[in-house]
Length: 361
DNA sequence: TAACCGTGGAT
DNA sequence: TATCCAAGGTT
Image (cartoon, rainbow, N blue to C red; front, side, top):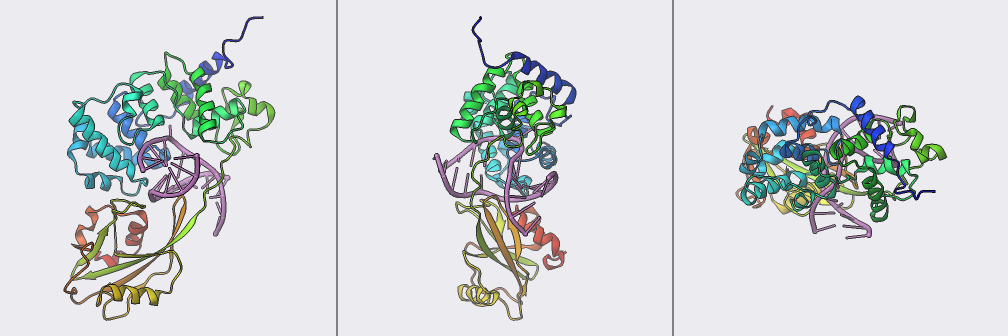
């Protein structure tokens, strides 16, 4: 008997590609091989659903149509376009990478995965995605979709992590066809997004069901093996919203922490719960006169969920007759009608949208 | 390597 | 309400 060259069947790839040809969604970034546009779409889609990212994709390209336009912009302009999308280091890194491409690489993106990998914000997934889609390089992508599809197809009982990623990549590399690597990678991800979904997959609609070991063994519900869930800590934020004569106090987050480079109100951040009265005394101690003459309007606790933190925030709104003589140097006075030019975390914009009258609207 | 980085939709 | 997790990367 002839020795088996690979443990994967080449018919899997052709069945998948045929399915992709008839079932693929018509998404805005499909039908272009322009590396800049592919790059923009791939960064936006990192840990982000298509429905959430699509509007940002259009807005981003409208504001920054070329890598030159992106490089010429300020990082604050880029942050503003990114406002509300989350994982803000993506925006910072794109801005830095655009400047590298324009200033050091003559405006041309690196033309293989290894070169792309050196740009800020481009890791193994994004390098492989751009290289295969824009340049036709036969490198396999590994994202959450691919991991789920491949662990099910071959019944791999390993969680995400170095060992599981290595094994899944090895199998994917055996499947990727040299003549259509971009479509193949996208087909794998599209199958994971539409058919081989988390929980109960839609195996009746699956083009590779007959090859699927998890289906055969009845393991689809259990695969992929879940990693241990992260511990979620609580943080208590107290925001002092000070207005006076159509101006407001804001400050920029530049610590190595969440929401880097975004703006917020002067804040007290605590690990424990504390009464609003005590918070006001702390604010007053830090900056006499800042909590005003009258009673501040204190919001109820607002809960904001991050991946590994729960933020419990309260807003203390005070209006002053006149500004205190000296303010902390991190605190910046800006006109209320200039707020729209700054990028805020969703917690803040949601509060402002809920109470427009407190912000002069 | 493990912890960190947001937001929102589905279940 | 709680949990999962999405076209991941950096430190």
